[in-house]
Amino acid sequence: MKKFTCVQDIGDLKSALAEAFEIKKDRFKYVELGRNKTLMMIFFNSSLRTRLSTQKAAFNLGMNVMVLDINQGAWRLETERGVIMDGDKPEHLLEAIPVMGCYCDLIGVRSFARFEDRDFDYKETILNQFIQYSGRPVFSMEAATRHPLQSFADLITIEEYKKTARPKVVMTWAPHPRPLPQAVPNSFAEWMNATDYDFVITHPEGYELDPAFVGDAKVEYDQMKAFEGADFVYAKNWAAYTGDNYGQILSKDRAWTVSDRQMAVTNNAHFMHCLPVRRNMIVTDDVIESPQSIVIPEAANREISATVVLKRLLEGLK
Ligand SMILES: CCC[C@H](NC(=O)CCC(=O)O)C(=O)O
Ligand SMILES: NC(=O)OP(=O)(O)O
Image 1 (tube, rainbow, N blue to C red):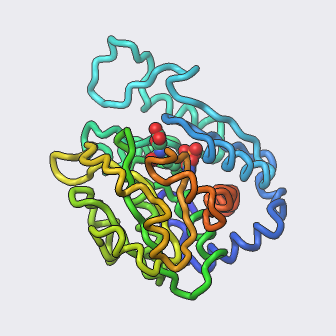
Image 2: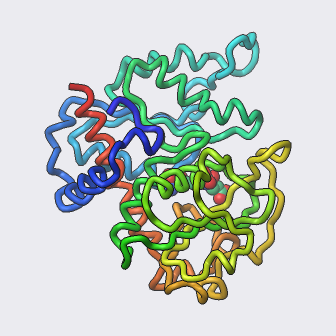
């Protein structure tokens, strides 16, 4: 594997899942693979789970790790070409990227959507500059339009907890005080559409995601109807995608906050969320603390998804 930015990069999902469950049985099985290899993790945005689980995955494979928080310690970076750099940014990304590539063997990048220009975001401008100019294999630690490490962990978790071959999985929008990226819902939809699950997306009108990610998923504007018979509920907020509303908050309707009311019409569904989660905006305390909540095992599986991805990128170096 030469990059990991989307579901297509991992190839056959059944093989990827088999590798994940193999590694889960013995996560140090490939500890020699990464000897004297260095992972560089570059964050343009905050992180807890990705920052910790991806480092742990690198250690599982015997790698060295460097972590850089851009604009905190490094020089502030200009990312636009053609800009006269007479302001507060002493370095351009197009120099910084190949320099960072000199010091490592693999690069992970977190760079969220900026919501200033939809084309800039949806062309994955920053991530693709790392792919183009670093000279190293690059993987996404959540970019503008996807979060594949999260989605792979979500799939592993559903496979572990499902009671039927084709569970009903419902992704629901929920209210949030800030405009959040579409990366997590886009990516979850992309991975769910690559399975044979019964996948439904529910959100208020106006929050339609990019059709390229929605694919053949059923979209239901009535949340209670969507929840009927669900085996898994995956909650997430996202800002509007369509037209002039890009990056905007259209609703903070707390009737969409996942509570016992909605969970009551499901098939005793497991509750999932990528975390961090705003309690009593996205989901009530009772639901996220209930026996059906699997948000912690879901987060734990981030170590497994990252170990599989780093293993395949290391194997690609040979
Ligand atoms: C893994 C999720 C990362 C990010 N979440 C946030 O930025 C939450 C920030 C907040 O709740 O203020 C998102 O929604 O894409
Ligand atoms: N789910 C996830 O990626 O969490 P962090 O933003 O804390 O890394």
